[in-house]
Amino acid sequence: MKKLSKFIIIAAVAVSGCSKSYFDINQNPNSPSNASVDLVLANAIKTSAGFQVTTFATVSEWMNYWAPSGSYALNSSDGASYKQTTDFGDAIWTAFYRNLEDYQYVEQAATANNQYFYIAAAKTMKAMMFQHLVDLFNNVPYTEALAGTANLLPKYDKGIDIYTDLSTQLGAAVTLFQRADALAVIGEDVLFGTPTGTSAASENPQWARFANTLRLRILIRQTQVAGRTAYIQTEINKIVANGSGFLTTDAAVNPGYSNSAGKQNPLWGFAINVSGSYIQDFWRAGKYIIDFCNAHNDPRLTRWYAPAASGGAYAGSVVGSTLNLPGNKLSTFGPGVLKSVSQPAVILSAAESYFLQSEAYLKTFLVGPAGSAQTAFNNGVQASFTFLGAGSSAAYTSQADKQTNYGACTTDAERLACIIRQKFLAMNFVTPLEGWNDYRRLGLPADIPLSIHPNLDVPGTIPTRFQYPTSEFQTNLANVSGEGTINYHTSKIFWAQ
Image (cartoon, rainbow, N blue to C red; front, side, top):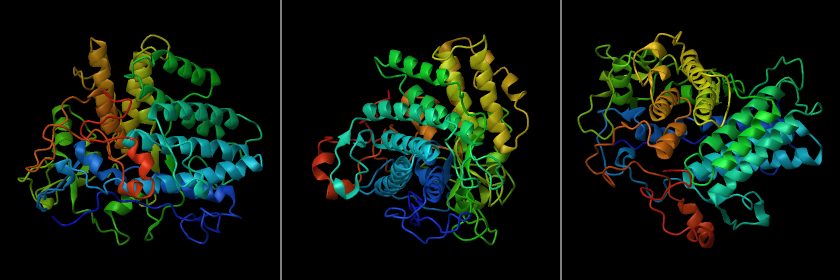
């Protein structure tokens, strides 16, 4: 097979001396004696946004969102084989911790100068990135992780303990965002701000909702953990009490993406070059998603994917098959996800926010008027339709179909499966890691096809986690060895089934 890197990492890059361009490299933010926190934060957020979709191409394959075309021969170490080589997680581990170092600098520098907005924003983004690390590796360095040369051998903290502190940190962030003196530099907020913003604090309510939604994600992720119910309820009560609510719009980053090399929206640049040519000749649509759309009258099909170049049909690959059609007869990425070179990069979607709320209402962690779970569910589906430009979802969610219509479900098990099915679909091309997380947490959607690769590592099991990277065994051997033998097909994240 033509060699393809499993992970497309956009490394944490340095801050710019120009406040309106976060792509030029003039300083090193990891030794930023004079770097302003607004520029370091903006660049760090841009870097985090670059991780969300293309970094997890292999996860998208495992979840059948994408699959290689038949133009490429299989080999024994393909992602579809479910094998993890010794360096499988190295790039992600290194890039994520470098990104976290930038947020640590922002939090420390802002704390020294009472810059409350930047303290809160750094806490929020650190929580998001550390949650990703736990979700991939389980126990990871946390309390000693960002000490730099003061501690080159950080201990490993338990995933559940990290999650507990992340919830606390996000609560503290919301309290800071609610301060009248939590002020950002106008025009420097690449997540919720605009260059012509009229109020230095105008983005704070959105940031607070983002922090609350991340916190809800962390808490809902733990609903299968024995003995955790009372804790989850107490923490969700704290979210409700702070009064900021949850995201109703996408948390989406735009540092000024443009049609220049290295400055394109990450997904756009993954698929289309600066000359406008489609260059992603390896990945094609997954047959599983296309079949579901056709069977359930899902109009998002034509937004996620484009017709095949040859024959004009919507067709997808089977993960691991030796009989897939050549690339020109398979669907490529579609117009609902490739909108423009300057499109924002979503790091947490409104659709996910609504589906998290729907699950919380179903499980009575949130309490509202009768029908609140269904209302949140319908809002989640509509948010996905809106993001893709697919119009109204009303007809879709009114079908006599327990996978599209929450109201057609008659048991809580069916309702949960309906929520997770639609959440799974909404994460396609947005935050695919969340699809894998729910699959590991709940076993849903239950019909995700297993790879039929002829050289499967362990037949019948999608990987349950990433193994620790080689770099840790080279530089932090005693601490990583203390985690014991890891089997990435049977060792589980603490919140998984």
